[in-house]
Image (cartoon, rainbow, N blue to C red):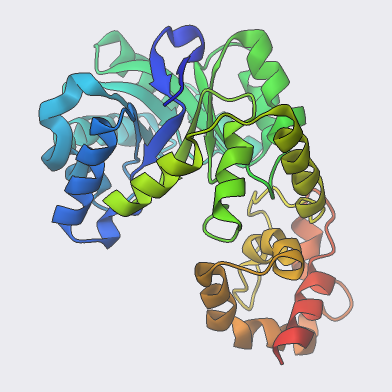
Length: 338
């Protein structure tokens, strides 16, 4: 296992972090075994959030007795001071700990959300208060707009950022990471498989592992998955392999979607998932989870072409800050599903 100093926090963290978001979907014993096996194998970064169902309780019931062995990061998606304050205290009780190493203001994607969180009665005030009280050691932010995150962190109010970085979403390398490096910030990459769409799995992990980040979070739910993730990272990424992986990323990211979720479809088509997986689906095929996604949403996708309000001007495209050809992508996909 490779380890890095986590930016200006001064703490050392494992290059592979354990993402606990999906643990509520498996039996408790399986989740407990996966967490403990990860610690046994040297994974020292545990990531969760108040909004991940009972993920925090699982962590508390499984590994709180080993609290000194891991760097614990959680998140609050609240934007108001009082609600965030209550949520922070609730998270500590759930995880059976007196403090978290990192509290992130979660899923901030719009200017309005950021302004509310940073305002006089916003969640950032609650985070600062918790930090003064010793309940929180460091404060971070997470989001899906690397260009906006780069602006928001510039004043130096955050210690860390959690951002997408994968073969299909390499955008943070140019839009965010250079600013973080200038500020000496802690860099946490998430979704190396982009939610289960990207293959080959080993190449996807090794791409993110080879980039300029301190730790990358992988959502693991079993001992076997921990083993698989660790096996993918046993060898260092040499220069030739890195060039190959970066060439793949340049090709697979031509969809240009950041998953900011500004687009909302009246037919409830998950447009970001479709945009991001569109090139992978065409070039490499999808993992079983990706195939199941298209099967699940097939009827919605096929009905897009007949939706009258979007015939002249697609509603989703009006909201996209990157002006992406969403309707064309959906309808091209529909032609392969019909």
